[in-house]
Image 1 (cartoon, one colour):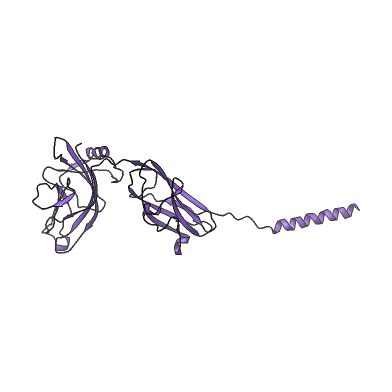
Image 2: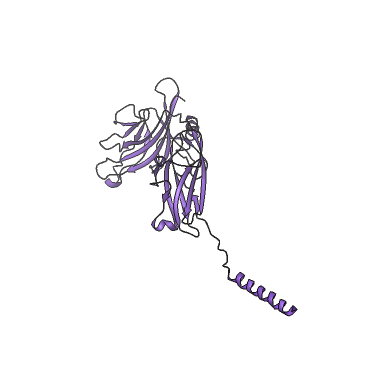
Length: 292
């Protein structure tokens, strides 16, 4: 009888072992990854911006175990309205298709909030619902500049179009206009025609030109006080180097009234070359701080 019980329990043990051995090993599921690329011109950490300022992020997304399904943006845990997204996404959240299901790098341009501090969450989700996210906080600063401009078009001084920038009016003016402050250098007649535009600028009519010896971010200089401080730490120069897209220069002029000084910041947004007609031109962005 004892032997029967022994064989009975031994059989149960073997059967239990067989069932245990047949259970599949647990599979570790890896969630997708999303990071913000650390690159000049893009926000990748907590930042201070002007009210409603547009800013760019560059997201890098890699898949985990499963294919990627979507990417989205939240502001303070609420889905960011689509009209706040300028470029990079046509919906929020946006479904992912084609080769991007395995990973992608994408530039997204969006507007910051109009007041206070906001936390922006950039998140991804795979086809099985696994998610990941990265967050940044944006603190707004009221823009106290007297003017912030873009698409200021200044031409080759040797051509038929306006080659001098009036900083106060934020407009190009004629060659003999005494209100002009920053002038293009024209052409070098000793060079062949396609390469003869000097692509330099210099101050005229009492203006002064400055260049910082350290890297400057156009967006982070977002108050008049910061602009004044940046110019005071920069070097006064008689003319620029050959301009490159993205270059930052500063300028000062006497205020139009009183005995104060006006401060300006210029960023080269584009340089457009034309052959043989000297209608080459720059596109500048500018910030203006008056009576400092």
